[in-house]
Image (tube, rainbow, N blue to C red; front, side):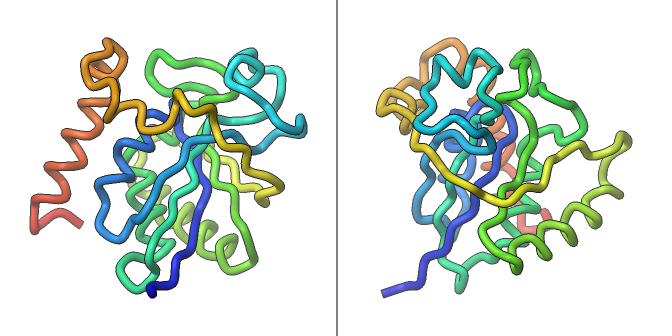
Length: 177
């Protein structure tokens, strides 16, 4: 049985990140949820108010023999705009902020290195928060596998699909880093 590790990140709507990370080889599961706030058992409506301190995040399970934490963070930075505070596209509010929640000292050190390395790839300053993971709260069932279940939903066609298409093209390109 393969060893599985996990990471928790947020970069806009969790539907986008879930759909994209599901395509990356070595990823065995992606679960949308909430983290980074103090309120226990938050739900979509409370988090959507912007008052709980939580971000929409995904917990990505992966096989470290196939892909490392640092490489997954590299993909994370390609999947969203880490230079816009509290916003991704038309989605606005602190729940859509760019955030990495580390589980241990090794993840923290790797995330700091990746943040430093990624800074050269952006014109603006990276605003991604780096915080210890206190708790991960799974999203409600209707938010899980949202893109797979609702590919024709307008948000999925206009926002999620382009991100998925971009990632598929990158994954298919042998010259892509």
